[in-house]
Image 1 (cartoon, helix red, strand yellow):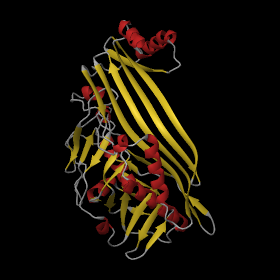
Image 2 (tube, helix red, strand yellow):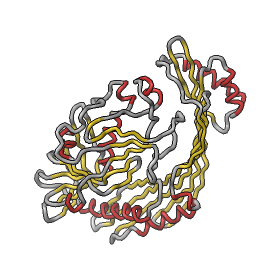
Image 3 (tube, rainbow, N blue to C red):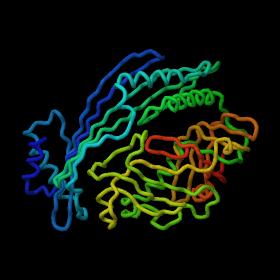
Length: 424
């Protein structure tokens, strides 16, 4: 690496450079029908070099990878190829972050465990969550990951951080009289809460039984719709994604600072904060791939877009103070308890093929694979239906739960109620 940096510094064609190193150490357990079949340890290191080359009024950049097998004799050729590619890119010039050093650790209780001890605890919790007669976990895989990331550049950036995450992949199965039904579950987390993990798997075991019992409604349903954390995450991610510097600069968003995200709200007012690190969030980081230190930025306040956020390059293009690529989506909780949400008739979504949100065509909808329909008294698992409607109207009527959940890069209400969606 020292030789690589020396070559980059002394190449007159290279205006600037950046080197990102990501080392991942993992401890992995693989179970088949409850029996531990394989334990694997992995140590993977990825190195990406970005070369910047100024030419005329432009600044181009290109990447190349350096592998453990890459020899010193190969480096000049890799640099030369990257420079030639960079000279073909006509980007508007911008400056790299400069003169900052530091070593950081993202907060997580994973550091209190050995990898094998944490994996065993996770596995035991997962299997203990199966309380369904004729239900089983046919396959379970547990991954415990420790990441060490380093970024350095030609302008004096040199930072490193340690962060953790874990993933459980499971195949919950229900064996009925006529057939067996399987679902797929992937659960990611950045801090261990055994109670939350237990409930996540228990809910999925209940869902696989419900999927076996689910029926297609004989008539159109008319009721409020309850979105679960996965769909709530997707909805608010679309809003956040439309307020990045890149989206605004590339004219690919309908929202700008000062615009009302909620046009005529009758429900809860939306509050969104983008953050660098939140305990338990698997996207948490102290700096981004450019080496920009990450803090937080309030982007939606009281249902109105108030700020943009994003990476160093596009922030400079817009004349904004770059925030860095803030990875954690934090949405303020709302006013409703789960009991209040489930008063009267409702359709609670458990699984969708994916929530589709399009602000340009004012659309929200998607295919429902499994939901619980309550007519006000009886709860019935249903499948084979879809929802559609106006995303503007959905945001105007949205009511958010008072309970907070973590889902991948999202922290916020675990459920949301929307009105006036067509169910068919």
